[in-house]
Length: 361
Image 1: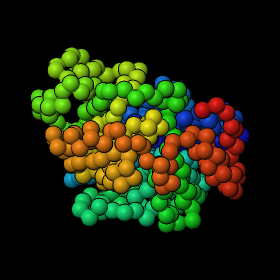
Image 2: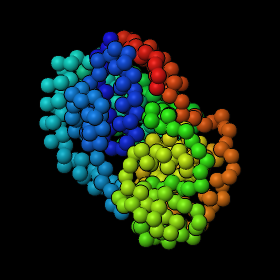
Image 3: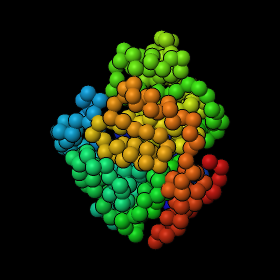
């Protein structure tokens, strides 16, 4: 049995759901795991692991007009740095040091990783973000400033991991020997879904479009139905069916969708790939990780992407839905068992190997 601290980034749903799955597997193997999270990850993980979860100060993004405001993000986090240091020093003294971890895992959570580096505790990185720095990519020619910012931020998050498990949906050459490429994992509830080839299009509104503008664009494609989440309302207006937030309802609509329109977050992309759904991706402006995700989705024939939603883009997307999903060897389809085989190999190579028992995912 190993004592493990698992640090989870607070922004984004994918970090939390992935860490829940991996953390439970570690616990099932008999390991003693302390989770640390902030914001969304703190609330999410406490539902499942209770007192095992401790609060750590987490970095946050500032958004303006549907895009990341880089200067405001830097300003906000710098202003909170004294508070962060006090809060995290208390966490380290009260919980980390008495716990005496043999391993730290970081899902893009910098403070637990830096603590491990300073204390000489081996740590492993498991995330998607390091695809930007540890893989050789085909970069779009534009967005150079977003690319530079994302690269610097990722490199500064932490250094010196014993291994970097880079989770991604396409194969790409790795830049260092300590990096390992692994395909996406999906939540058990998604793995239990039965995909159907329905007629509706599922739209998750992080597109930045106003409701009126959205109805105007989508109304041109009646009688095709669009099931829309993200506006906190339940109504049917023409061919637009607005639905209130519901995990069960959303997943049912996802399983039965003909296609999906959303931003280019890695978690939803992974679920669409698992269910073999083509996507129209609208990356959050200035978020280079999402731009890369969207670029490769189109490059591999898994969908299309655009900077903004308009009639031409929707028409082009609908025109591709009858084409079969690609059978390309470069695609890493979600496979939980294969992922855990790769992870087990990483744990076995540590100076003090960690057991991760096989079981149902």
